[in-house]
Length: 388
Image (cartoon, rainbow, N blue to C red; front, side, top):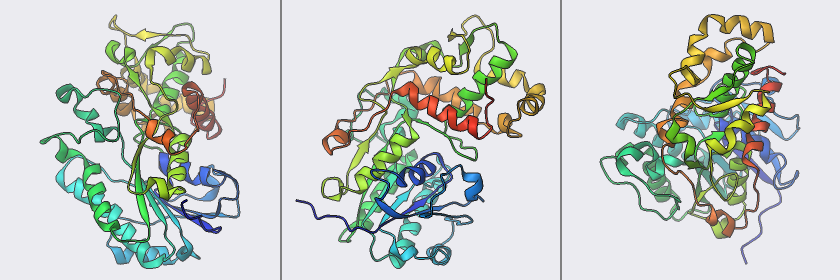
């Protein structure tokens, strides 16, 4: 039998303004019970007040902004020391990241993770567990046209070969963390979602829900009598994928961290449900939320998705003002990410196998369309999209 966890658990979340980190902070206040964590601390680089965070009021919650993880270990230690009782941290959820692609950027992402954990280790003697996120890049999704990866994807699958592997910073992070954790009292695991469906109070470049929501909202306002075309390709429309709600991802981080006897050193895929769904299966249901009739990809040469939104650029500001929305929300949204995820990134079966998550007792699931609806509800509350 695994040893029981101490009663006073304290969560420290790096990257709390991001799509995963924000959800981990929010979820840790209530999951698996409202009393599991006695303290939840969110760290951000960009300014984020509790008032503007859209996080629930809770005396256990505190946010610390201005924590620059690109510095050395001592600068991170200095920033963490400013947080009252940070030394009581038992669980670290590291969800911060820099840009990826080049050798220099890969090195920077490894240093972000390792310098942060070295700082935590100096200050937090009660540390028990660390989670960090990897994702579809691990399985070669970005190079699918060349590698032809085969679903369902499992954690035990081999890493992709060179020269493609050198672009996957997750491999470098994992290897550095595994080496650093040897012989330590604490352990770690990585959580692997595919594209994440969610909300953040500030913009996030890796959020598929936000551009879809604004596209359909803008379409409802400007083309209410016409069906909205799917913004991607006819090929991507048909293939299965397992995009995942941010709360489901957060629950997985927490569940894994609370069961170290089963999960130490492991890797775990996560998805909303145990099966994939295609864009064709959900597109009309997403349109229903916005009272928009939908159709498949625009194969007749008409504009859709990013191209259509760009064609309306002259009216963005007036639309935002008319609807009482956050100023600049259209221009600041990651339209390229929507085009990618509904385009060539989805032109193959991307289904993740989540049986390993089930084997460690993770039972949570959510209807995939409902995950979008909840993300849209949060955006509506934050004045990112209008009410009907």
